[in-house]
Image 1 (tube, rainbow, N blue to C red):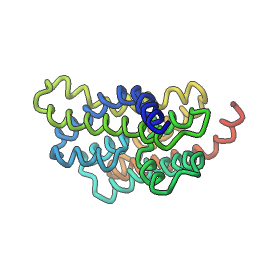
Image 2 (image 1 turned 180 degrees about the vertical axis):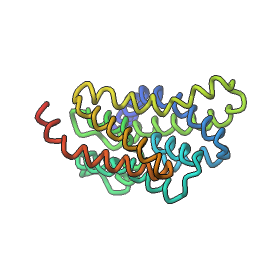
Image 3 (image 1 turned 90 degrees about the vertical axis):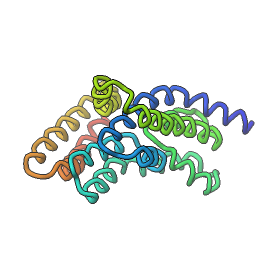
Image 4 (image 1 turned 60 degrees about the vertical axis):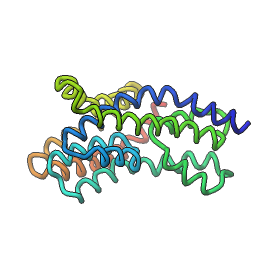
Length: 228
């Protein structure tokens, strides 16, 4: 049963692997072009394992943002992981704490979505297989992109810079289609970031826009619930 749960988890993670691989390659290429060494690039994916914040951190490094700006911005962006962790761990209360500690590291938007869609409480080995598949794909793709950054043609590597925007759009569009007011929050955050960028450094502009955009979302939560 346990082996079957592990295999099922890996199988459920294959679509995530396919989606992660090109984005991870793009991250590896962009990080190397920013001047980040191969080892540091791979370690970022291995230890952070948070695609959106990694792209943002690399972008902020390129802009010359300070360490405090980068840490705070990535913390704010990844704060949703606390919510996802609490929600998922609530479904697997009987799982031993050591397992929970390991599984919490593997929670991403995609693994959380797949795990949450399981009708029955997911087995810890199912979650382990799911998250391991996603993790291996992300780290391997990063390594591949970092090693091939000098081989990939400039035109292709330049086009990879849109990977972050494509990933955000991919996450945003389904939400907008279901709740159109989510689009207003995204537009407001983008407008605030543009406004703050003319006053503050790029790093703090991202931080403030993220915070204020998130706060604005509080006022439309009830409306979103009413639309369900």
